[in-house]
Amino acid sequence: GAIESGVAVFLHGQSSEGKSARVKQIDPDCVIIYLRNATPESLNGKSVYNSQTGEMIDVKPSWLVKLEEKCEREPNKIHIVFFDEITNAPLSIQGMAFNIILDKEVNGKWKLPENARIVAAGNELSESRSAYGMSEPLFNRFAHVYIETKVEDWLSWASTPSETYERLDYKEQNL
Image (tube, rainbow, N blue to C red; front, side):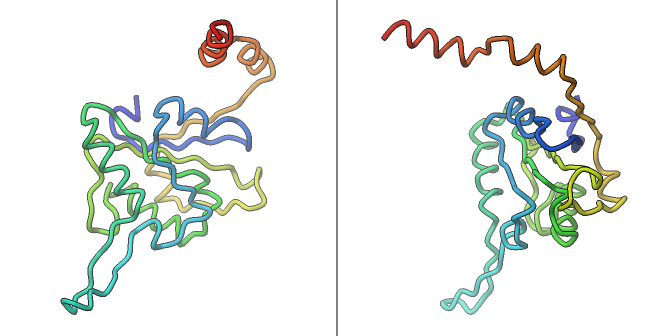
């Protein structure tokens, strides 16, 4: 519901709880930004000098170009921008992500498409040695979902054949 309404969603959970897998279930072709490896240029784009005109040109980040193309190609479908490992990103990168989450705008220049939604995931400080704290203003911009996998639930899931396995079995039988 939060995704459909346009509210940014934050998935909390321990490592290997399936946060990323859950996002991919909603949008298998989501645009994933691994914030632990992000640079200012990869997140916000960059400015380059045009020697022919003597002017600076702003270049969109590649993830935004990809997102815009998908949103334009499928205007009636919601497309997710997934900020993965946001708590493992340095505070300077978290600050840049905050601007995108708050204003749904990249670098103060480019608006996210209307059918784009933001989901982020990260680990708690107590669960990851590489996690950073998240500022209260950034934390408050999300609807928070806490994922906790129980052994019984996992065993039930693991013992149920998925559509993928059923399709593979079908293909093997018809070879």
